[in-house]
Figure 1 (spheres, helix red, strand yellow):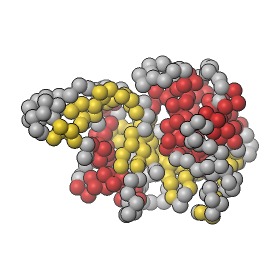
Figure 2 (cartoon, helix red, strand yellow; figure 1 turned 90 degrees about the vertical axis):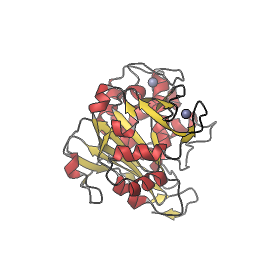
Figure 3 (cartoon, helix red, strand yellow; figure 1 turned 45 degrees about the horizontal axis):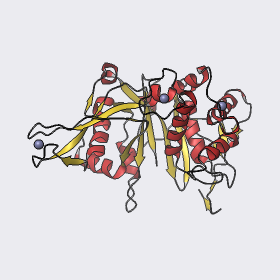
Length: 325
Ligand SMILES: [Zn+2]
Ligand SMILES: [Zn+2]
Ligand SMILES: [Zn+2]
């Protein structure tokens, strides 16, 4: 699974340095250790992208306190890694504390357990959800806490509704929030072939609504499409690509479809917030998966360079100790 992250306000000459299909100039950065048998590349990639996001890194540093879970505290473990990234002289740092905290937190769900590979996008999403719980200790979909980085910076506040063009009937709006907007790569590639002139955002919207038609709410017989409306202006938008086809290799088509810019008005049927309407987001981070290994790339705003993550050693051993690249 690969995914792209965008945030508003260009931080450098991204358009010049980012050209799909070309070699990127990569600056060295500090990395996290991934010893044989650890299978930590999924976690390391998620952490690297969070670290490279200026908005996230600064907000986390400024947070005064949190509801601490001691040894299994994901918040403390993440802060520990960030402070090592900032102060340590080592080039490769351990992520064991965070790995332990994740394993402990998700042991009942049998997810993110020590030594096992897991999904980097879901890890990223779960770390964000946990940070919310460390700040606002209750499960809520409508978090309005000003200090909650997760919802203040990452959440897309949406509602979906279907409106019939034929009889005008509309369904009740269904509100929800998303931290990651998932799009099927099969659907995306179909749209790429059909809509060559449309923006990346429009392609993503078409891909995520295609095939998602419902019966008219007043049963006039029409099949109608679902409309998703964005009500806030998230600073960071995360797109998760779902690789739902195994018979053909879509990687090249997906990479070619990636745009360095994303307009939220293209991504959703309608955008109500004025900032969100005008703002253009730029690609700043990617997590890629290939040959059973995750790696991350992030756009470093200060140097206007792409940086590659070092999860060291770069060679990766999977659960069965079989060598993979
Ligand atoms: Zn803590
Ligand atoms: Zn929250
Ligand atoms: Zn109707």
